[in-house]
Length: 208
Picture (cartoon, rainbow, N blue to C red):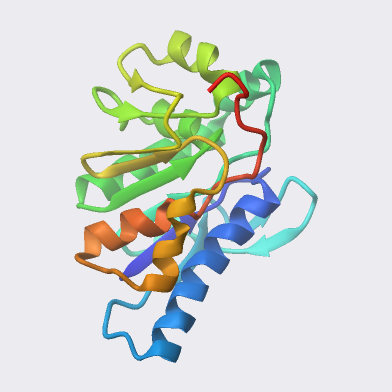
């Protein structure tokens, strides 16, 4: 299964690492246990040939314009944790370019997943219009204001709606599926993996 990890400048370092480690570990465990199942072919893809993370690390990437359409794309969150800088980032050209790339891949049948603040970038692409979704709880008022066409439920950690998976915040207990190796279908296994990948670890809403 071909997976593109679409990383933007300012990507949350832990989020990017979690995605790569989750799918890499799944491959390694499948090999170790002799599970006959799909293997994940991962590539870090960016809008340019290099990405600068939120902590200033430079990560080489395949330019999205030259990348083949994946079976699935996972987009780690960008690290803008308060409304004002997030709104400024969403107005930038990089988010618009990312939206065009995501729409193109989705139109060609790719599954799409993101988490936390990455849900804002996905919503900007219009791929969440009419879909159910979740997001990080402390930014849910802003999300509702900006994206009234999205059926938001921030009380849920994971939401799968058609070909889109969104995650709210903390790593899901469903990550245990990595160990069990339950891959009933390509789409189902991808969805289960994204439930532990691409998610920054942040405090959960104590009122939930």
